[in-house]
Each structure stands twice: as C-alpha cells, then as structure tokens.
Image 1: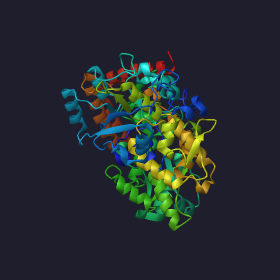
Image 2 (image 1 turned 90 degrees about the horizontal axis):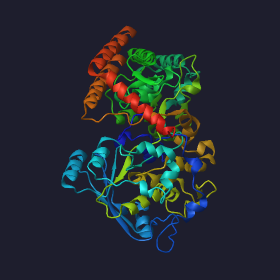
Image 3 (image 1 turned 90 degrees about the vertical axis):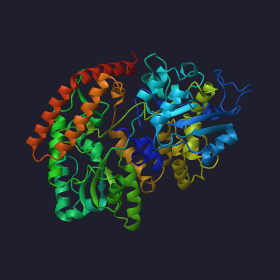
Length: 560
C-alpha cells in the first residue's frame, strides 16, 4: 500500500493504532507469531540478575539508569515529553529510563543537514528507510546492530530472516524497524452503507458488474444527496487503486505505487502503462466517473470532507487503502441515532470469471513502516538497543497497548500474550493506545495483533470493536504480501533517480487524465502517450534496475 505519513493519513498501522488501536503494517510468512517467546521468558525479562547481565551476556534493561535523546525526522511529528504518557512515567519510575526529545522544528530536511554538518546528532533517530539513512551510514554516523542481535533476541526472534532485507550495502544492520510483521495485516477494502443497501433490497454485491448496477441504482434513488462510490483521496489512488485489483487475479495495489510503477511478467518487471489489467480497470473507473457514480471532486477533496460525508451517511460505497478508521467512527455515531444504520465491509469485489480468493485490494510488507537508527553520538548504544529490543517484545508492547501490568492484564499465557484481567477496562485501554501512539517507535505487529484479537474474539459480535471484527473476517485475509517489491528506488540525485521522478510525473498526470477521459478510446490514447513519454524519459532503464533489485529481494527472502 501507499505509505502515508501525515497525521490525517497515517499508514494502516499508525492510523489504526491512533484511532482503533489495531496496528498493522507488514509481513512475510516465514517469521512471526509462531516464534513467540515462551510466557516464562516474557515474564522474566524484567528481572535483573546480579550484575545487570542477562543469560546471553547482555545488559539488562532497567538494572541501572539510561538516558538518551530521541528525534523524529518528520515535519508533522515531535517526540513528546517523556513524562507526558502513562508508559513514559512508568518507565521512568520502574526502569530508570529518561528520553530527551529533540524537535525537527517543522523543517526536518534543514534540521538533518545542520546536524550532519555540525556533527551534532541526537542519540536515536526515527525516520523513513532509504536515502537519509544511507546518507548517515555513508558518513560513518550510525552504529551497526549485528553484535547485539544474539544478546537481545526479541527483534531477531520476531522478524526472522526478513531482517536481512534491512541490511545496507556493507552487509551490516543499522535499522530497527517499526510495525514489522510475519503475518498478514492491513485494512484495504470496501465499506457499505447498511441502511442504503437494505433500502435497495440487499442485492448481490460481488462482481464489478454487480457494483456498477448497485451504484447506478443508488444514483437513481438518491440523486445528488448520496455519493454512490467514495474513493477517498483519488490523487493518492486510494479507493481507485482498490478497484484496480478487482480486474486481475493477484494484481496488487503496490504495482501502482511510486516505489514500483510496474507489473511482473515472469521474471521481469514490465510497463504499467501497457498492462491490460490496468487499462481495463481505468476504463471501468472512467465510466463510473463519467456517469457521476464517483465523487466528482475526488482529486481535490480533503480528508475532512470525506470524513464528513461518511459520518453523515451520505456515502453508499466507500473504498480506500485504510477505510476502517473513518468508517468505524461513523458507524459508532450513526447507530447511536439509528440502530439499523451504520456500515459493514464486504469481501473484495472481483471481475466476473476471476477467483474471488485471488483478489487482494491491499498489501503489506515484512519491514512495516519506518525505522530507528542509533547514531555514534550515543554514549551507550548497546543499552539503547537493549531498550528498543525490550520495547518491541511482549512486555514493552503490552505496556504500550494495555498499560502497566496489574489492572488490565497480568502475566502471560502459553502463547506469550498478556492474560487480561476481570478489571480490564476497554475504554481506558483505547485512551491509552491513543495517548501512546506518538511513542510507538518499534511496534511489533505480529505480536500485538493476535494479542488484541484474543480479547476481541471472546466478545459477542455486537460488542466487538468494529475495525477488529472486519480486520479478522475481511481485510487481513485479503491483503497480499508485497515484501519482495520493497527497496527498489534508485538514489534520488542519481541519473536513474531523475528518471524515476520524470516517470512519476508522467504517471500522475496520465492517471488523473485517464480517470476523467470521455471514452474508452481516450483512455487508451492517454495511456499510449504516457507509455511513449515514459520510455523517452528512460522508463526501460528504471524497469531494468528495479527488476534486478526485485530478484535480489527474492533471493534474500528465500534465504539464498
């Protein structure tokens, strides 16, 4: 899926953690919950043996004071005051940990350049994978983690061999991932307005033909008072990208993203512009747009405007890379006024004749979202890694999601998950998760999702968290693993990096034009021109570069 960073559009994982506390961001099935630490290991992790050394010869987090500075490399984010959250206060009092925030001042690019030039770096930096991490590594400013992995085994245990995908060109590991996973997750899909659906006779809604007929009937009955199909932010593809996946078995949303912009054919990545599935999807989407079955301001509307429409029940079908937050909040408010209203999710739409179980409206990757790096400015880099490893393990994740051990949970079960108490307070837990979202720096999706689902699964369906229910039943089973397609971008300032930017610009323009085309023939004409322009810009060389990177990824994933 498209990686989104700003608060209104946080990735699957960050947004969901903020609003529903159901994180999800990545995955490869060769690691994860099957490797969960035993409950004994989880329970004894905080007990510091004499001398503050654990059984593997590492330092025990909490055995003595630790302080470090923390910086978030984003223009929308600053590390909060450490004592401003329940978890922060608990860690100060029980683990002798103090974290000193360093602000980006709203201009992270300038801040980073200044810090590098003056060699005055914070101890830990929270940032995107890619160019900036490599810039720091090549300048010799980062601490490698290889010597720590066996001493502090949570990351290695939970991520498995996928950890090798984070290694730099020198073969060393410098990045501690956030929201990595070994299990399917994500929230892409279709949300349906229950009241409108029932008023129209609850028709079959499985194929693209069914969807077209349904949207037509919505427009006929409700006119301009209801948006038949709401695609969220079309400029980011969002719900339109979800529709693309309906036209091809194993056609992935990721093919459209700027980190790929290609379709695999055999062992080669080929042009997206000439892909028959993409062209068929664009013609279908263009038809919906021409007939005003799609929001006519889809490319210009804001998230607040989308939120308002969904909240007021003025949307019949809502699709997005992560519709669960807005839809859940709207559902909860609507049913307060009318128990027969609200929203529900459906199995992904597919073109007639395709296998519905091979349609994937969303994707996830093993590496999750962003990463933590420890700089050589740190006085105690190993101790910082020890904390990060504890934080991503059972105790740290349980603290962040359910609060300090005692009230909402106590001890761990046979799977290493927290045992929830009779005093578990769901509202308190939700508020804790909202408050802790800004300090969830290295979330472990493969651990926390099953832990949360254990609680939800014991409740009657009507009492379950709306998002949790549909994640379990619909979205998680229908997200595809796209880990093999990560890290395929050239350096931004390189010759190929410039080619990439040109191709991205060509795609962005052609995408919007093809959606707004007046006929199928015009769609073909627009995409034909985009293909020619992209090839003239060096698209073939970019595809060749990405094909080689894709092959290397597959070798790493296969353990070769």
